[in-house]
Length: 265
Image (cartoon, rainbow, N blue to C red):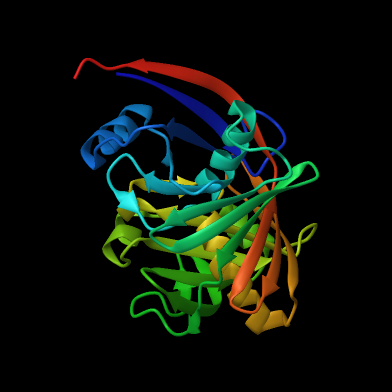
């Protein structure tokens, strides 16, 4: 069996920044076990698998970390759209409909960017049972819970950038991980995401987290549009817009390399 994969840096216009994802376009179905093995071999935070359906413009999309399949991944969805445009599976005028564990996700070209239509993730103000006042030495302004994760608002951008996480403690006190955030200086908001329980100690840029951050900051500021930066070592830039229970995420993506797998199964 021969498979071609593209590695795409998402939420950036520059190679070797943003969040890299591998994308595999499938004309024929392969097993979940093989998908997981390929994701482990690629050893990126996520590997996406896109499979044609019987309906033109509609595709099945699944995401795997090196250790497990996940429900939603923004940067690997963005990467999938870019790789499909590069390989001729889609054109800039197309709306790409992905069918996923999180429902239908729509991606389309928006000038130099790609725009993703994702579900808004509800957040609920709450107090973490362990981290109520300080998180690894940084003062907590407000905390909120969402499905399998927590958001902690810190005092300022510097607190977000300089926080030193304890991944063992995060793994112990969350289902998936922690999102930290603050109002930005150049950007509306800045954030970081730590997900040791999904095999990603710190994610470079996290689409799903911004589906929750849009709701969190809408409750805080009442703003429908946000310009966001994820302050990881690689860094990544996103434009967010709330539409009822959906959020439009825009970002750029650049293809870095193509890999060929020849599997003797």
